[in-house]
Length: 269
Image 1 (tube, rainbow, N blue to C red):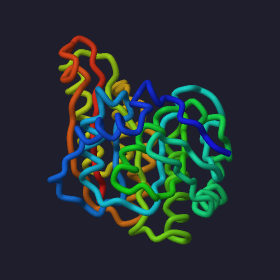
Image 2: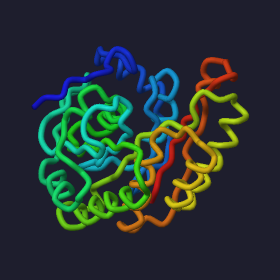
Image 3: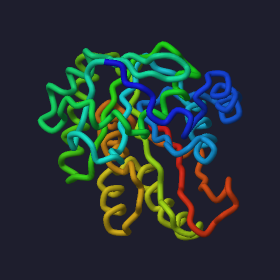
Image 4: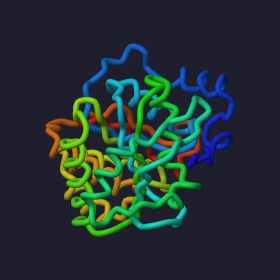
């Protein structure tokens, strides 16, 4: 099947030339590139989060395959949805799902289910693809969308992903990207406070602390689940460190600091 771009022309330009021009304005051509196991990238409209996403994508070496994990905002589909076949459209070209790796992950997890409905209108994975295509147009990927759940479920999914990568892919040529925005619609000062707590847990590679702080402090980080899965999986694969590439809020773009959304870019290596 071909999954059509759902938010092209809304979150980012639908015309190839316009999209490339916008991405050009966000990337850092002088950035030192790290050979990373994973990353966190934001997924709002490019006008708000594109600079964070672009600078984060600039900071890691491109891979042959990516596992893209995003939160399910739409409520459609299975709670833990993976697509194992198909092609996703993008203004920068089509991207093929890595069926062998996706199938291996599906086989190893008792929670992930084959499902395309969860991905049809979901933007959290789609918006990351053009940034990855800008640096390497010929990669393959595995899309996974998740609902809120217990920590043990996320850890099981992480183990399944890590085991599948170790057995069926070159882990040096594979990367796990968690798609997430940070605090939503709180004053700038409150967003900074909550987001720093979440980011500190991420930088310690402590998925348990991240999960607990999100729950205890009611941090409206929509992709905390993908971040937890990414952290747990990359540590199994050998990650030892994390680095904050950039943090800003929608207020830094709009000038309205009364109710902002936070965006953080992190690499794990």
